[in-house]
Length: 97
Image 1 (cartoon, helix red, strand yellow):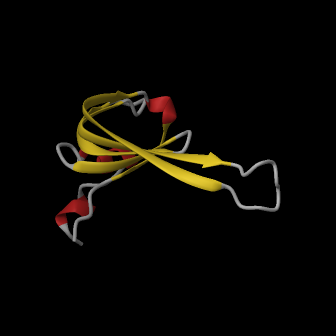
Image 2 (tube, helix red, strand yellow):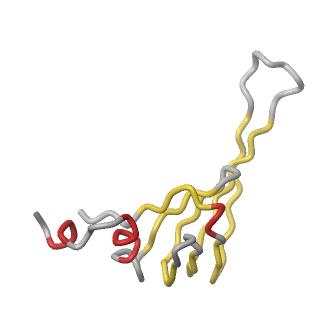
């Protein structure tokens, strides 16, 4: 067992080990973030820097239910961001390969 696995006893331990590293955050409303995690709390409020937000916008085609919708992707970058925890669905730590 490696040193990272031994330090994980509870779910928040995984988040704690991701401090000052780039994480992936999935939010409600088809939004995703990647950024450097600086702080978090028990409500999963997050403070991220160097953030890229990706928003998936699904647009149905002219009322035809049997025709697939189109998906547009909008991206924006932010220097610093506070994320309210009630919108957080998933936080993924950086790949440790």
